[in-house]
Length: 401
Image (tube, rainbow, N blue to C red; front, side, top):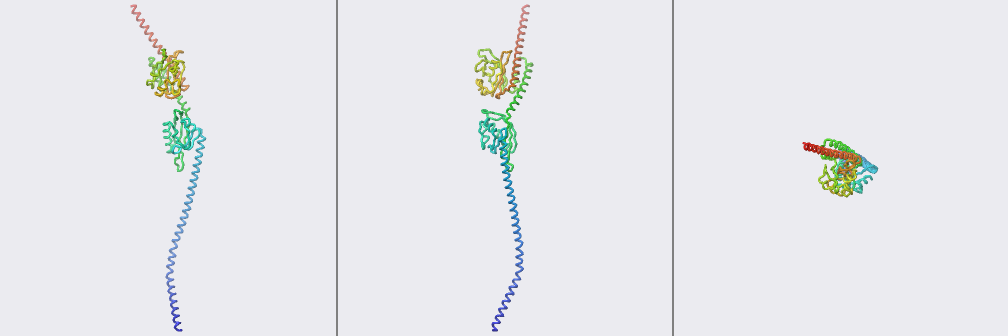
């Protein structure tokens, strides 16, 4: 019994001792636990703060992306609207208007431009096809590319152009090249506006020629006063016409009363180079007398060849005329009273070069020329007669002695 109590007492002591030791260890570990707990709190806050920052950055990125998408959509919408407006402007424009991309391919054109390309080059143009390939005239193709390239670099280009195929038609145009831009303000292509100024250029050229012809009239009148003989006078008049009016060649032919009714060239100025020697022109009513010169002498009226390539009456001289670069001509009769004795013939490098008002002035010049030639002939005859009378008188004086 006593033994049992001792054992129970010892066990109780052991348990109490163990509990005391555990309490001491527990108390010793409390500061460490508090330290660990304390050290973990700042890390969690940092992580939470970083998460909040990431969330905010993500929200900002989403907003920026949304704004960018909206801007892109708006830019596409504006670009689409601009393209629609451009196409509407092109379709409604009165003159030829069209646009091409950076590869010179059509993106739009109006009916006027399509009709113009048909007239100038015989082309049936299509969207997506290269503009330059329709230019059958190599010079036109080269110049078109030159100015398109300048516009594709962002430059607005204004030019005057004489365009077309000789076999079709050639006309004058005033042309404006405007670069149009896409996203990032980069040049996307070129819009071209053209205005046909052919009639204006023709009027300007006519006015210029009339001014030059008036100058020639004045100079030719001066030549009559300064010349000492018929040949010198005719040479001066031909030079004046060539220099002042800018014609390719001028010549004066006199009508012969031989069997062939030949026209004899006596004076020429400009690029002749053997043309007249081989022309064998007549004023008879045959194939070599139905050209401008023979007709003017035979009828006493001005005669024109507006286009040497197409006028059937000019066939005998066509080949040589082309070699010399002639394209049209006018012949004006030189009349003594009502009888023609020759013709003043003028050649141009341009077809249909003689306008109505200029023809009137040239006819006046030819009339003055004919008067001058006749006056010099009469003066020569008078001098010859006076000389003969003087010699006859001297002979009579010697005979009386």
